[in-house]
Length: 89
Image (tube, rainbow, N blue to C red):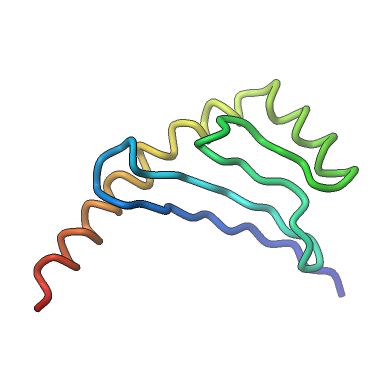
């Protein structure tokens, strides 16, 4: 069979917004076809299909929604993770 899955990730060095990178990667049969990265600010395609979809997504409302994910999704969760890690001894 075929598999399609998405991985969303927040990488951070501190709980400050500038130190956080949000990425969302789309895979098909274990091959990454397209990725959104907050440091790039747009979708990037890695296959022929991914490149076509990246162009479509970058010209639609999806790119604006993904740019907001860094603050709405990552910032609150990173704060919880940092707090939890700092209170452990």
